[in-house]
Length: 82
Image (cartoon, rainbow, N blue to C red; front, side, top):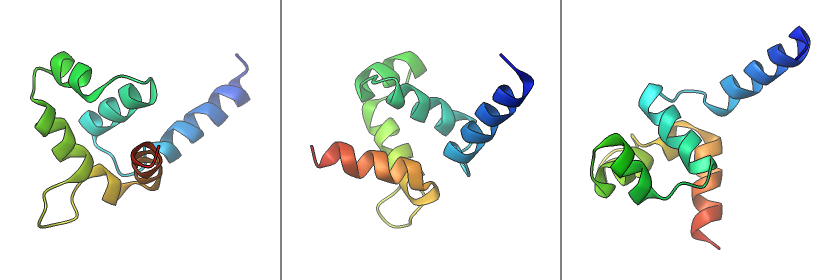
């Protein structure tokens, strides 16, 4: 892969993962690879509600991934409407 292509790919990755922490980036990548929430929870040794909490945040404050990142919000709303 050419250096300029790698630079472009890295720039795209940074844009898509903007404002997400390491765990949230991992969750979002697995979701983009079409993993289920249950599969991700099993892989990370947590519960399904814990994954949903990371995606949606707590009910009282906008802290979830969908509030931090436009790409996650778009994916979430598109997924829910299909």
